[in-house]
Image 1: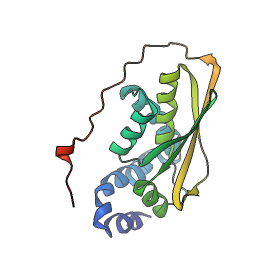
Image 2: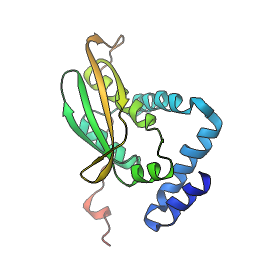
Image 3: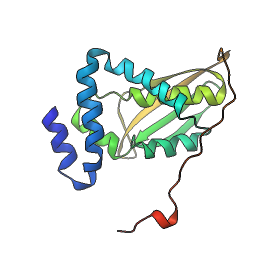
Length: 172
C-alpha cells in the first residue's frame, strides 16, 4: 500500500499537496496505533471538534474543505439525525489507495460538533461507500438523542473562520 499512496498522490501534480497528509494519516499513524487506529481516530475527531468549535453546518463544510477532508454537504436533517455526504479529491484518493479506508476522524469530528451545536448526545455512523451523482461519496449520519442532553452543557462560542478573499484567489 505504501508505494500505492506514493503513486496515487504524486502521479498528478494537482494531488501532490495531499501526499503529506496521506503519509501521516494512512501510513505513520496506522503503524503507530495498529489495529486501534480507527477507534482512536474517531475519538481524536471528537477532540478536534472541542478545540475547533463551529456554529453551523456551513461552517463545518468550510472547515472540512480547509482541512482537506473533502467537500461536505448536509443532505438530510431532522430532530434525530443529520446526514452528511463527503466527496471530492481527498476522498477519491484515499479510497483509490485503500478501498477499506476509514473516515472515522471526520465522523468523530461531526459527532462532537453537532453535539455541541444541538446540546444532545450525538454519535456518527459511516455508511458503506456509494456513488452519488457519479462521484465517490461517503455518507455519514449523525444520530441525535433528543432525550439525552449533554451532561455538562456549555455555551457554544464558535470560532471565527478565515475565509479566502477575492484578492487572495488566483486565476489559472
